[in-house]
Image (cartoon, rainbow, N blue to C red; front, side):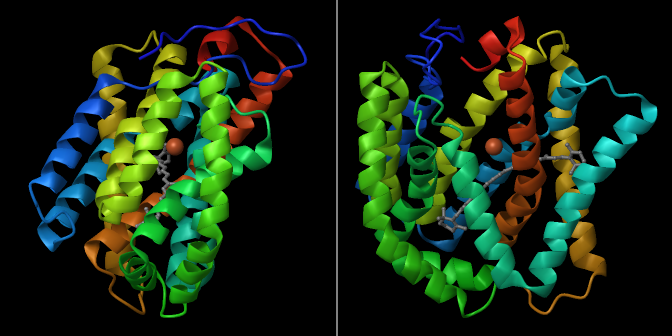
Length: 314
Ligand SMILES: CC1=C(/C=C/C(C)=C/C=C/C(C)=C/C=C/C=C(C)/C=C/C=C(C)/C=C/C2=C(C)CCCC2(C)C)C(C)(C)CCC1
Ligand SMILES: [Fe+2]
């Protein structure tokens, strides 16, 4: 992994050389283990393996959004009522997304995929062009879909309704363009010094293409996307004790799961999605406030660069 340091650059360049080049050894270990399992013929697409991958992406991925409110508190001074408003607003937006899943699941699915593309595109801070970043974000979905159209289509349908198969078809049609644009993004990231990230993402896209979709997604989400967030967050919240850091992650992630289970138990649902579909619906629900907050915080930081930003955006 590369140290989280700031690289000074020309004031006209948005992206800093080597910026965002954060990959931990755990990623290479997990990727190697998955390749080994696939070569040994482990059935990674079977229900038990999908359930395992679901546990991994919920347990390992959910905590990375748990510090959103703590980050907000570092950015603006919040009194008691301000805190209540922030937490309430965050939970209300997530709840609104849950209501969308209940009432218009197809709209929720389209919104989820769009939000995910923008959010995963934020990992590509080394790319200056917003369209390149969006394509790179969308390529995570595109690679899994073009590699396993039937499985992804079935998952989309399980999350929403039978018309979702058309969405999988549209993504399959658009996938070559997204992947081609992303290849340019990878080359640019490599050229500009973010070599660990470029190599890790190139391998991840290849694995998303060949491995069953939930396994490939768990690898990306838990070992590439979340650690980047967590590393940046830890820099800002460095004075949090380890106990409080772990406690916040565990508590808020558990609350999000508990909230999901409560709503599922008391609200009238028209359908009963399988567990992996529900796990993606839960992610989608917290993804919306997570994206809104991360964009707002980034906007504030770029409007008022501070010494903290120098480390935060490294
Ligand atoms: C603070 C707070 C809280 C918590 C929170 C949290 C914990 C968050 C998290 C957040 C997060 C954690 C986010 C995430 C995001 C994610 C995403 C955005 C994802 C995406 C994905 C996708 C898009 C996928 C796709 C697919 C499918 C679905 C199938 C298969 C294939 C594929 C892979 C393609 C609460 C609510 C309790 C309360 C208030 C405050
Ligand atoms: Fe995230």
